[in-house]
Image: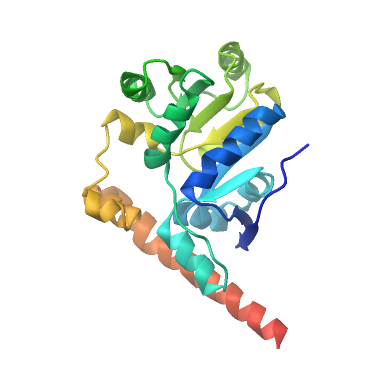
Length: 253
């Protein structure tokens, strides 16, 4: 049985929970205690842009037990259609809250990034929280076939309360959609490139900037790789949001 959402808005077909960062772990705690199979994910502008190109991802997002806002652009997009999302929360920030809450209570299993990166990120968390139980694996695993079945067994052997999956969109969503039934953990949670930031492999950019506009800070750090994602992708999403809002207003009239 699913935990009932406290409140949601729908953005381009994706139901997004109305949450603050403080609310996030309260909801996670409830899902862990429920001991049913729950799936948690996030929506940011890149996710919404990918959904425009890959509509097969929509069932993943519509099936989430908890979907939170991970970007100021999403807050703005919701406002443009007359809805309110109180704040954005991103993995590089809430991962520290999760580590503190999990220490001595929950087991974590973290899958993601290139070989060695997630292991380093887990070690950074454990340095601050020595009682944290966390198993880390890299994110380069086959989606199907015997190799993936063996990896799923490894993940289940960790007996984690929460499995964190950080393979990037759309790979992580497709992987979870294909494998959630086989994963025994109460909570499976996608979290994007968080391991890259926690490990120090990727710079988040100036703090004053990423606290206000994470996408702009990432563009500052790696413009050659990310300019199309953030400049063209964000524009595409805003155009779709404005078009959807206009159609909604016309129907009401």
